[in-house]
Length: 467
Ligand SMILES: C[S@@+](CC[C@H](N)C(=O)[O-])C[C@H]1O[C@@H](n2cnc3c(N)ncnc32)[C@H](O)[C@@H]1O
Image (tube, rainbow, N blue to C red):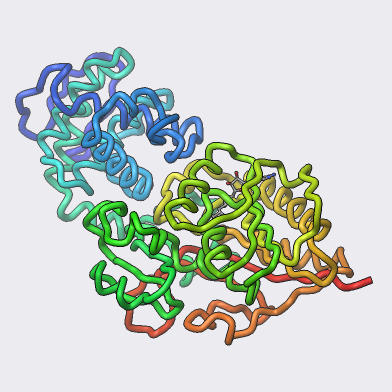
């Protein structure tokens, strides 16, 4: 066995860890419940593919998460975001300290190690606290008790070597599943994929859509106005409701890329516009603020509650309908429709790193099928000659470019209404030759003069030919 490496053993270990042993703390010490919850939730994301937002929902989240106070909840989320964002890097670092792989059935041991390594490598938690809590946690769990000494050795080694080990591993590791890397490379090429994956490792800025005077809000927030008129704060240090203008409903949080699809409907003042798949309502707000008479439809009652409270805070109104769009029968057709369809969300990995590990190529195929059905439904709900904008936050062509191309091929009655550069000042470079919108996450230091640093998004605009 190479020096400094440790070997998982089936029997209680006799091998001494190479790092100095420290006092191992008792079972129910402060911080233990947070680590146990983080381990449990990480397993739920990885093994059961449960979205992190569902597990950490303040009302319907996982009971182990809901049992924690606010500070511990924030810690659990921070641990999980790092553990998911850098999962491959962490896996490689843990692996580099082992002489042979952990037993395949040691799922909870693996989750426990990932949670502790995420703290040691990426969080401002003293290494000794992360290690001691992990060892205590291992001892308290009958499935991993016999590995407690191994846990101690691996984690102490990682703490000791992290200054060289981390940059070296980050450099040679891609933090995404292989299938996603392959699909991104096929769509965007190797260089762009590398850039996207690098951006996915970073915290996203917070973008705001403002009702008016973006420069004033940028100054008040200590941020900057983006070329499309959104306001960006790169490193927000207070919670959103603490910012000026929140209670007065002067702005809402919305990635700058997500602010673009509603604009593709043109001047909507006074028009009957259906916002289909509307909740939690970022795009409904944009349409209502632009003077449209909006009907906001979504099948999720819980998400519609959020839409209603968002609109109430913003002093905006819409007719809100809880329905499955595939079955919904409105009394009248609409002048224009925005369909912001459910998708794999692979364009929002910075914000939702669990997407890397909860989604699969099969999900993408299923979602693309649903998107196609929802989009075809829009053509039954729009007035003849009316406009339909289809958008989603996926980076995968199967949910964007390919879907549009096959729709146009199979439906001669539908035409693509090409997006013109003058419609999206500052974001012209995101308009593809074919006339649709494709944004990809890229780094943004504010110097390019063009919109950058946004989520991955796709949007296309259609009209149904008369007759
Ligand atoms: C990407 S989110 C919409 C985000 C929203 N447009 C915004 O800007 O805040 C997709 C939404 O589609 C809804 N949805 C999925 N399938 C649906 C269906 N068949 N009928 C109605 N809503 C549906 C989901 O409940 C979810 O709220």
